[in-house]
Amino acid sequence: MPSQRGIQRRRQRKKINSTFELQLTSMMDALVIIVVFLLKSYNVSQNNFSTTPGLELPLSHSPETPSDSIQVVITPASLTVENERVLDFIQTAANPGSTNARYDFKKGDLDDEGRKVVPLYDALIKAREKTELLLSKSKVRINGKPAPFEGVLAVQADRRVRYDTIRKIMYTGSQAGYSIFRFLARKNEV
Image 1 (cartoon, rainbow, N blue to C red):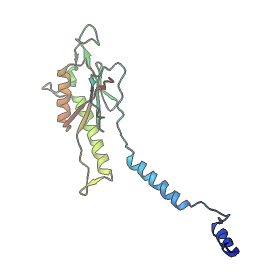
Image 2 (cartoon, rainbow, N blue to C red):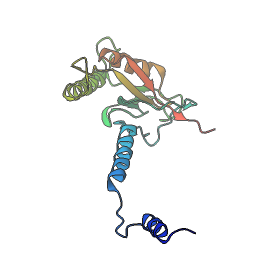
Image 3 (cartoon, rainbow, N blue to C red):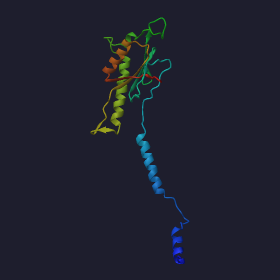
Image 4 (cartoon, helix red, strand yellow):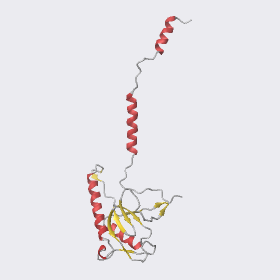
């Protein structure tokens, strides 16, 4: 038979202190790890790609999302850069908005050679200078220097806009220092 003293010692060892406290240190560690994970996995995009009412984008099956870039929207009526209307087209067809309609530039919109769109060029240079200024003030450095200007231009073009118009816009973009063109399309939900 066990002794009385042994039974009392075992009961005292098993007794839990009535002033039990929650260990906040380990909970704070877990909370900090969660916050750091969320901050690292959070992706910030400056571009908000939204379509203009009446704009018919072509369809695409690509799963890729567009990267940050300067946005040019070509509608049958006008051309905008970063949500700022740059110029209006002259509609030369009897039925505006039809697939055979032709959207031409005004006489003063093109340079002497008829290849570069002057108001678009000015707007793209202004956007490039703004981007380069922001990159120079950014804390992100590559070998001690600011990140270089990538020259990416995101183009939203209506399906009805003719190729020669898009070609002039692309030529103007290349003259302004943009070397990568990303054409945005509507995702085909099949």
